[in-house]
Image (tube, rainbow, N blue to C red; front, top):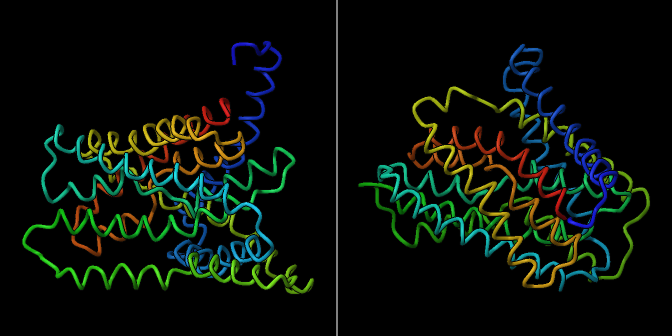
Length: 323
């Protein structure tokens, strides 16, 4: 960065603005549509369901159902992301101890510190950034999604169960729950199906490929509109310190750790950018649902989501500047 001229800095700033501003505007539109009740109540729950069960699986299958020469590179990126996840879990428990967070809220706090919104925010941003730079999105961005999503689910179940008081579940039940969530996750299944198809060496028929790709293209706008519609600032009341700390760990400490590990592992610029974007993603919307279903502190979960979305913008801007 030190050897760049002022004109180059201006160009970089414009790239950052032109990359992130459209995403922010789409998120803002989703918030406006929800606030003004322009769409019917529950509309965005249905579009999120459509994206999760149809749009993203089609996109992931289409991008992985071809000969893959990037498995080794994807594994390196995965190691960086997995290391960032473990680091955030440890840092989350450490921060919870010093903040003296109640036991019933510790699991929610830690989950919000590591569980990123890969499907609805990370992948769309990676796709958009790649397209803005005039390059096709690398298969790496899709390949690392497959193992990370079930790992996030398993980690979330673990920390939430560990924080439950007086509601014990057997180890067998927890293992069964993790396996069921993993094996029935449509994103995981679509990547596995795509990899199996790529092993056959067959090309996807042109008519089918165009249909699948067309369906997958709806993910970016619908996912970001859904993020905007989910914003709820009331969840921050009385929880600002806890929510902001977890958000800083998620969108600040995680990409910083990823940057250091990525440099040590010798990742290329594009690989490092993909890893850091994923690590800088705001907390997953699913963390609120899981906290609610497992009788955890879902109010804190909502606050962490809102704070992480607000703090993710400067974090992602910095990532685009340095990578």
